[in-house]
Length: 101
Image (cartoon, rainbow, N blue to C red; front, side):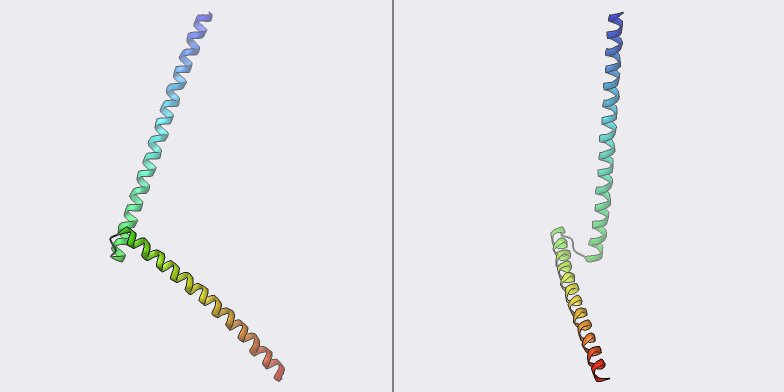
């Protein structure tokens, strides 16, 4: 009886290992499939960007985007400063009008 119990337990362990191995293989295949799909999406996006910009070199493309982002940030800050100055001047105008009435 003990021997049969040991054999049954060993068979169950072997079955669990096979199931775990299949699960691991499935997960790895799924991860590879997802990664391949992402690479395909990035490749398509890069080709669209290349077509729109005419820039073939990825380093040049990255530098162009970084430069544009820096310029946009600078302009954004400038607009905020100008808006703050406008508000300040409008407040001064209102104060002067209130004094003259």
